[in-house]
Length: 334
Image 1 (cartoon, one colour):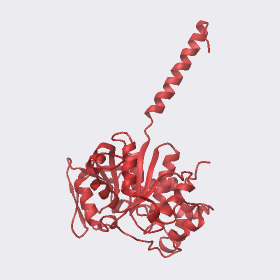
Image 2 (image 1 turned 30 degrees about the vertical axis):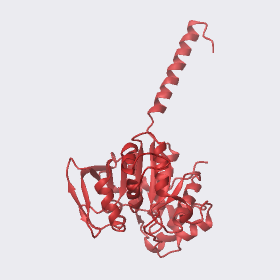
Image 3 (image 1 turned 120 degrees about the vertical axis):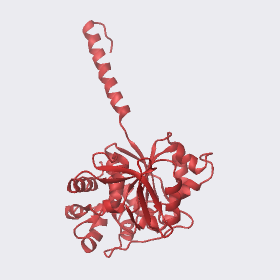
Image 4 (image 1 turned 90 degrees about the vertical axis):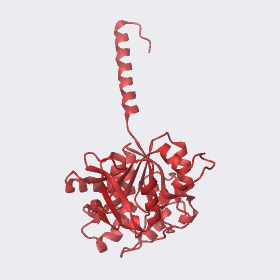
């Protein structure tokens, strides 16, 4: 557009101001870069957690860099890929833990959802052991990201992130694991532990890894412990929706009526929510230190200077439950 008159000049100036404002808003938009680490299989709250993560990605709040399994169960990675594909992101890199690690299938009484979902829905990987080595995937993805930009959220065992800390320089990055984490990872969010004390599944299943991570991790750690998700029951609205062709609805429909008719406890969903949106407005936080004992139990010591934080309820639980299940009900963008 040529601006030959004063009127046109004013119009052009207004256009440029508007464009500048839009660009400024876009550049300030805070999209959280996420690596999602799950033990998907023993429980099905992982399915709800990954559905929430995709809902937040659809809204522009999250960018999913990778989805990895801390569980060697053969159907774990296929189930992850089923959900990624359903939400229109079949190319998200997937990986699985290697070496000495847990191999656990579902314990729920209904149909074996871990076997059913890969039968019903498209995915690429036939078995978890055919996917990329999770440690290699972590290193490759982290090396490609800006410094201090990545949030890792673990909703399963801490085996992968322990292996990441212990990793050595490779073709992707000349840094050792601890240095790579310190350089690239802004925060680690974990569904883990019992506060103030107890013995929680994700921690005791790989006690050695949990001790290593909570003792040596160089960036902030935020915990959503057992007592948080225990009080948030979700899934009934999913099942009652009767939606067809959804692996999220199918997983809950296979398990909820037999095992949890009032709703399944939402441990993993809370971790994803605060990993992307932060705790403020939903929860309060308290700083301190989690210590893992040799039997897999843990203790918590409050300390305003501590390296770890955990969340405490702030928003009414009913309101928080509605928000979480609302995100779980999200349908893929067309």
